[in-house]
Length: 422
Image (cartoon, rainbow, N blue to C red; front, side, top):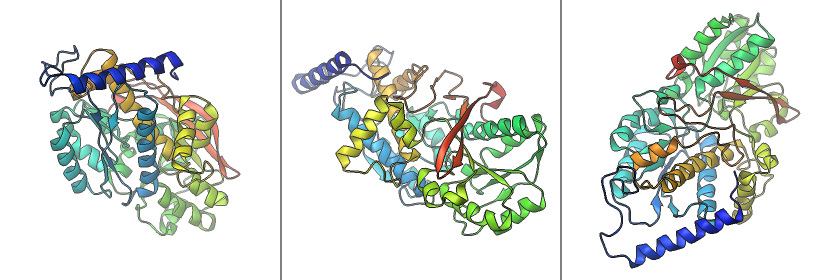
């Protein structure tokens, strides 16, 4: 819920008082303790700014969606600081890892050595999965843009994300197909990466449960400049629906060849395949494409009229950006804002509960205080529970029509335990 004036005043007062204490207190009189949840968690707390690093892809293979996401997170954190949404400032050192796992590891090592942060905002599936053991051992909450179901297992207890997981995104499409075209044949098309493959096994199992015919898998690289071969494969197998896990660039390649090779197939994109810039650039290619997400498009966020809409407008005004410029004004920017709101909620809940907001274990416990929270009006309500860190099981389905993403319907999936990690 948006903060009222009294809440803002309280935040400002606590923030000012905290700063005064930090300046005037004798060394050793603040922080420290045994991490028992009473505000004295391990690692010490000097009452100053909380350091939350970011590891982003702004120049690598997924930078087409990574850069606006990074901008959204940075803008949102600046807004939190300027408007005193938290009683502490958030420092946000951040770097571009160019979608290279080794660079992500180097940045993680540097950031954890420099500041012992309670939370890091990360990015891709391969790097997030590679770091999951380290973040658990180091007790660092890791909020990433990877929505891999693998990150929800007990082996990755410090990983959190803000969307329907990739496999359940595919399940939402499959449920809609089964309800509307039960005799259809589906196939999965994806890049041969950890990100691309993540929803395939679980998605195919659910398609079988629904009684849908499933054709052979089709590979479309992140760097593809043609999809003719892949579309011929789909055509030869009489595929009616392609479930596509990729980013927006290969999606555009797929759709640009579709009209000439196999115009009758319907493409159902997962969260990174569709965004406003691509749709507006090639409305005729995207016409009829189906899409799934658990949060709002950029215009949908503005139309929500919540605190998130106020934040986005304020951010664009502060930075001199155009709300009509889709290069940043797109759903990936909203995605980045949501990552920052998750950071805000974790720190806010820790402070309100008397825990140490600079201690990762305390912040992790505080993440489970996120209940029925719509992320400042930007998303489906999120709920995090110990033993089930899937934030939502609701897929928001869209269809591209006349150059815009039109909301179609919400698909509620069951919260099945056997889907955790699959």
